[in-house]
Length: 185
Image (cartoon, rainbow, N blue to C red; front, side):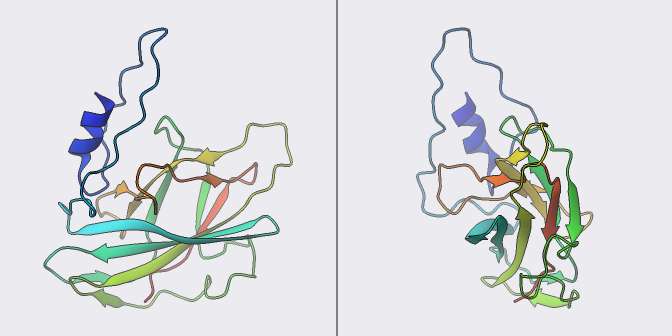
């Protein structure tokens, strides 16, 4: 059933309802990976995980917006982001525009937003920044799913992992903050 719901999600979106729990003693079945090379593009946009960088606890993950539709998309600002745990439940974290004091080491993170137009077939970029530090006895805050929208008021959809069939992994430790870079080329 879960694989069927994932297949109906289209363009990285996810069902709003959570799957029913498996009966006691049932074995977990991994989700099927998409059979086509490219996920569908029902909304005209896709959000895809790019390269990552990790050094001394600082993590940076690039994200690409792909205009897979037929109309240009105007961007001027920051994507809207929701971090979700393995059960698709929102994490209680602070999402900040720019570096938000997380680090000054990531070049371009605090550049102000500039208007850009993404034509069909083109891409725009953003990035996430966080520190993986655990300094309390509270449980780690780990996101395995991300909902993202191009701008305030736009439709949220799931960020697609770079490798189909695997989950994302954003381990904020106990810091509880994620910095988001403005859209750029």
